[in-house]
Image 1 (cartoon, one colour):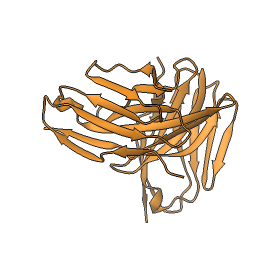
Image 2 (cartoon, helix red, strand yellow):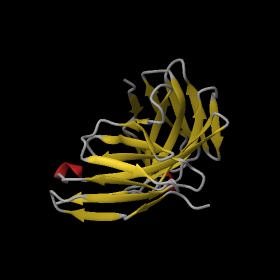
Image 3 (cartoon, rainbow over the protein chains, first blue to last red):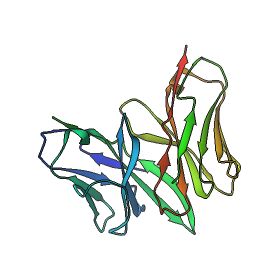
Length: 115
Length: 113
């Protein structure tokens, strides 16, 4: 069974540019969440999508956006990149069945470096 | 606001020791708690998921307990091995914030051969 796939694994961008990260969830998982991980702030929740709708959003500026497609694949976009956006971006998928949450499976992440 | 604390921040033990990692959370209204491990520069690997109605979960040498009323969880690792060296993170899913997970800062474990 394939896991959560994130592409690309590594990115180097220049300040002011924009970037798009991709996440393919486990087959059958309809919920996709995004997290930012930095040494200083730890893991911070960005947003969650379920059935193409943003269901939850963290405390990040509007430069961070996302979307989900009908096949549950998700993308997140960061515009006008700042040095502080350098981080490991993690995607997680999950499923709920019969009212029970089966927990989260994370991808390997995309390491974004802004120079 | 839910806050999750993990103690200790770092732990170094000789191979073969049994050890306990601690996680505490401030709001007991949680849906479940999940333990993860993270190797340097990698993503998170799920270890154990404990639903709020459960007291513990076991997988191989790992055992996690949950005391929801006191806001505590422990991860017990038996007969530690060098391959267990990693950062261990606990995360809670609160009842009232949808699917948002709140993470602790992690415990960095080093098992010395």
